[in-house]
Image (cartoon, rainbow, N blue to C red; front, side):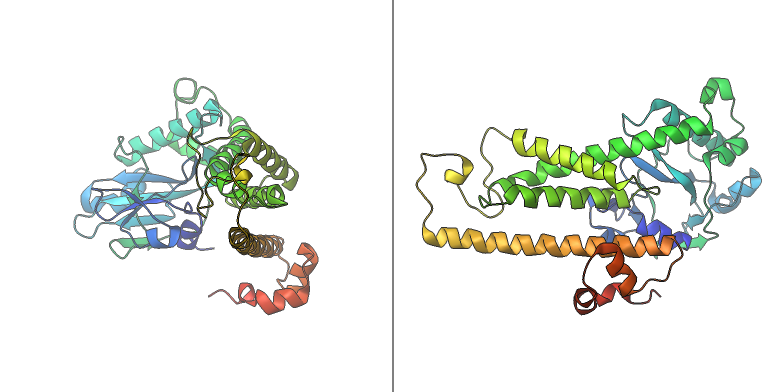
Length: 347
C-alpha cells in the first residue's frame, strides 16, 4: 500500500480539518480529505509522527542534515518552502489516560530528540498538519515503509535514564495492547451514550437485541481501525458489557429525550399514566422500526464482508465470493446479487 493511500485510509472517521487554520471544523473522512489542513491521527492513537519544519526551502532536506531516515511523506508549502515531515509508525502509540504513562513517555522522548535534530518547531502539537492529499501543497511520497519506535529511538540519541526513564520497546509494546482495550471501551461507551435513547424509544419486541447487535457492529468497526486487531472474543465481551450497562443505567439528562423519530411520551417510555398509542402511531413505529432493522442488517452484512475480504488479503489468499461466503456464512447467491461491488478490482 502506498504511503498516501495508507494516510487516507487511516484517517479518523470524522477528523478535524480547516481551510486556513483560523477555524477548525469536523467533517467526514472523504470531505475532510479536500481541505488544506487535516487531523493526521486519531484522538487517542498516534500512527503518524509529524514534524513541523519552518526553515524555508531547506526544510524538505532537514532529515538529511540530521542524518535521519527518509520520511514517508513530505508536504511543502510552495510559497515559502516550509514543510511537514510524516513518519509512519509500525505500531500506534495510544495517548488515552489509561494507555500507560511509560509508553507515552517513551514516545515523547523520541519525538523530543528527533525534533531537536531536525530543528523542527518544538511547540507543534501535531493535532493539525498540512494535508498530503490536498493540491494546496507540493507533496513528495517517498516510501511506504514503517518505523519501529526502537529504531527511531536509536536515531534520537536519547539520554535514556533522564528522558526515556529506561523504557524498553517491549514495555512500550505491552502498554499499546492495554491501550487498544481502553480505547475500544472509551470510544464504544461514547457511541452508546449518543445512540441508546433512539433504541429505547422504539418500544417494540427484540429492541434490546437490535441494540446489542448495533453496539457489537460498532465495536468491530473500531477494532478494524487498529493496526493489530483485538481478538473477537474481547471485542464481543466489551460490546456486551457496554450495551447492557448503557441500556439499564444511562440517562442523558433529567428531561426525557424524545429521540429522532419523535415518538413522544408514551407507555413505552415507562410512563404508565400515558394513554395507549393510537393504531396509526403503532403502524408508524412499526414502519420506522422495520426500516431501522433493515438498515442495520445491511450494515452488519457489509461489515462481515469487508472483514472477510481484509482477512483473505492479509493471509495472501485469493479474494472470491465463494471464499467470503465460507468465512461469513452468508449465501453466495446473496453476495453475488447484492454485494458484488465489494469485489471490483482496486485501481
